[in-house]
Length: 516
Image (cartoon, rainbow, N blue to C red; front, side):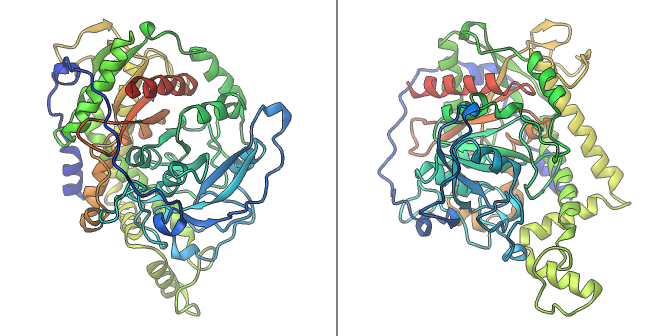
């Protein structure tokens, strides 16, 4: 485990010189994607595990919600009344939920028709949607001879919207499971502020990190759903992590009411995200996006998030520890299909059921989480990871112009600031409205490479998405093209807590800017 932590921490910045990121670059036109297969069938891409070609119509949208009918695909770890919910796991292969997730009910009341359940990594544990009892999801941008990863764990949801089988798809984002598939497939992937969207009816992986997210082809449908129907204002008393109504009003009052003109905005470029492992073409696209925003009047500044290098290691300690606890109930007695020797007793029954019912990656994470919670390791791993998480949140709070509405104003230590960093005030470096970074360090990889690589290599794909997840911040991945590749890249915007409305409005401007 120490070796894994060392490698996760070893993603070092290529340079701290902001000129590498913000240097003068000529604007270029995105290349046209080559002709790809576009037949939308569940067998071609394996993105649906259950679907209804003649989906039962949802009730008409409630008039006061100002909603329009739309087709909704739902990730297979979100409970639905009319489809099984199996989490892509053999241990739940016969599970039919007796109730429906709050978010599904909310969207049905807003005009959603559920068209099917989408494929995913088992229990949301994976970065490529390959750890599934249904087989891997195939990226719709694949060629006949070169199947590509759709990203994970919400790969099926991303492919469903990009093929036009759904207008909006639900996913879950723990450490990047909505944003990574969005980056690989060219979708828009949005992770809301933690506590905004109810998690009731979502099968838990890591309670303090899990967030219901949204995928679509464009930003506008997600923005309309959140704002026009006031989805972000609804508290769910059945979910203890759902922010109470009074706190929602306080958070909304603390945020800027709307996105102003570009000349009033400051966009931060995190220097620590410019790692040596970043694909040069993606770095080029990142520079081009920053340049495009600067040409529209935004101020682009370098910022430092010094705790970023520890984020990946801390995340995989915390997430696996919570998974170890959450998945303990799947033992063949309370929940889950019993193993082959279902008449066994005690430990024999549990080990047989869990050994045959969980996939290799899930078992790996359960073992890692169980160890990090043990008496010999909890102080050195779990407690230290919690401390790192607090430092990461403080890093973000220091650089955002808006105050985190759930935290008291704090005077930050400047001792870790580089001598060349220009300070705007005594609380830290130049404060920003949003952060801009790549979503993933690489393009969509080949499935053959993914299937042959070790788990640690797969974990590295989350390096840009994990820090904001640990801080509970809203993020959105916006697709872009870069000269020299037919595959899309993802550009990630990160906002301050509960600044979701402005973030999505900014994402729409970014998408338009990089398309010109």
